[in-house]
Image 1 (cartoon, helix red, strand yellow):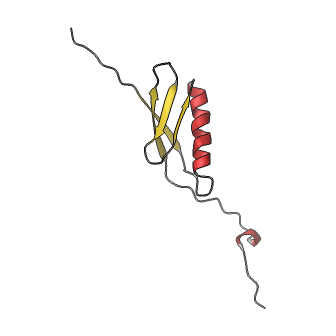
Image 2 (image 1 turned 180 degrees about the vertical axis):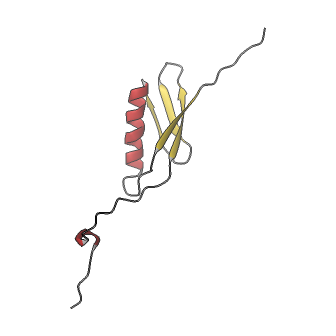
Image 3 (image 1 turned 60 degrees about the vertical axis):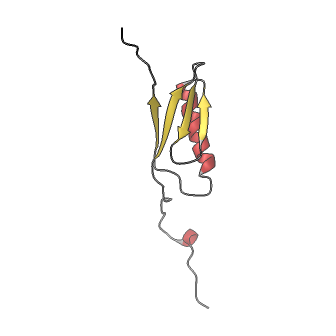
Length: 87
């Protein structure tokens, strides 16, 4: 009977494969909170403060990628839309 070597029986530990970087477009809501939308995946979340938004984005990405390789990085790109009226 031939022995079968499985990944769990390997003496070397391998790091999980990681996917590409995710980029979120972040805008400030009218009420002062933040809204983040991923540009490449169907992920959308919000937070009342910047630290809360960071936690929510991390949790949302974890939920989206629970069964596939995690992204190598998450980039939050804050977009400020300001209209200037010349005098």
